[in-house]
Amino acid sequence: MQSFGNTTLSVALPGALALLLAACGGSESDSGAASSQSTASTSASASTDTAPAETAAAEAEDAVEEAVDEAEGAMEETETKVANVVDNAANNAQAAVEKTANDASAMVDKAAASASDAVETVQVAANDAGESMMGGLTGDEGAGRRVFVKCLACHAVQEGVNKVGPSLYGIVGREAGTVDGFNYSEANANSGIVWTEDVLFAYLEDPQGYIPGTKMIFPGLPNAQDRADVIAYLKASAE
Image (tube, rainbow, N blue to C red):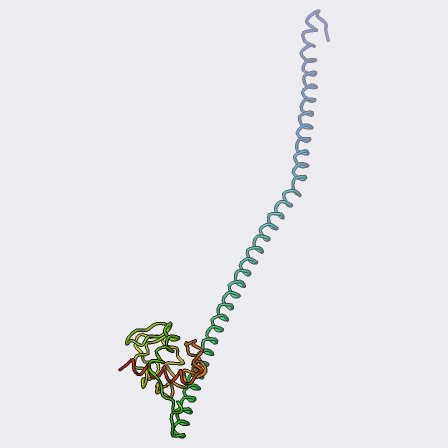
């Protein structure tokens, strides 16, 4: 190379600058590539670290849904069992009530039949004996009125006047359970009794024993003369 003073420096300087810039440019490019590689590596690592957490969350969500389904199924099963228990209890209670009603009805019918048989037996016995069950007693109307005070709480001798018991107007010779407007017990209404003097005389001694199941709670008149007197009063009150 020829040196022509400052001319040589001018020619060499651009070449050197070019070499220097190339060297610098190469370093920056390498640095950028390294930085990009580091960033990618970090992203991959972060992605790898979050995968187990996402899997655990998904599994937990599935477990919760399964538990909810099982709980709903258990509730439905329990509701069905409770409904069945209630239905069974209601059916059993109804059956028990029906059985009790049937048993009670059968007992009343049996008692009425027994009462009817007893009355018939007594009447037959009286007829066979050829005499009144009153044993020849003669009733006194005035004395019967005084004895009847014991009966006034439940009975009246006026026609159509029902109290706790039915009106006794015209009772002598009347069929039992036939007074209009009075609610008789089945035992009385179905007894088939005709209130003759003899039947009244026996009945008034022990009403509940004579007609089992009657609603009449009066204990009776143990004195035979009192019974004869009351019957005389009842006959006179209807005349």
